[in-house]
Amino acid sequence: MDAVAIYFRGASVSQTEEVAAKHGIPGQESVFLRAYDDWVAETSEEELHKIQNALGGNPTCAVLIESRYGACARVALELATHLMKDLAPAVLDDDFGGLWSSDEVLDSLAASRDNTIFSLREAHG
Image 1: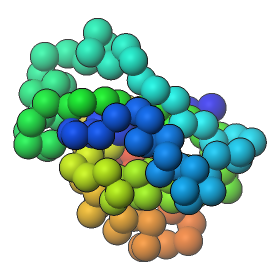
Image 2 (image 1 turned 90 degrees about the vertical axis):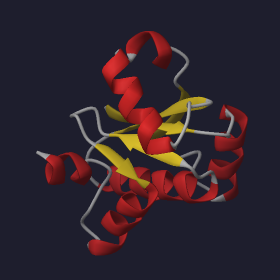
Image 3 (image 1 turned 90 degrees about the horizontal axis):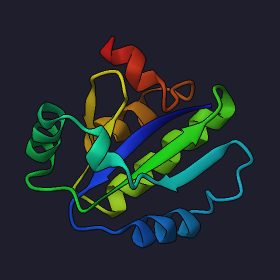
Image 4 (image 1 turned 180 degrees about the vertical axis):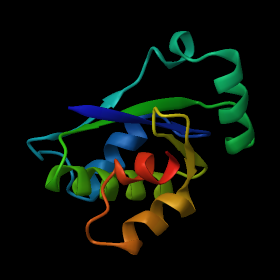
């Protein structure tokens, strides 16, 4: 399992859960949406500044999307796209130094049927 974080400005964790349920994503055996409650303690000042700049303000919540590699990671990319589109503004942190806007995540989904949530890292690196 590996994970990415999505930060939101103006949304709550319960709203992210509602969006995931609306799109039928929960229940995927190897894709999980979890509240990322420790993000404040685990984010450096420099990282927080980048996230604030990308969001245009302070994050109100963060979630983790955890997934296995392969087909499940494609489902994770679809979930990220729905969350970021429905609860904008949002920014995805690929945990490899890359921050991705909603448009960039959507572009990755549309670019290839083979792209997954982890394709973003590969594009960054």
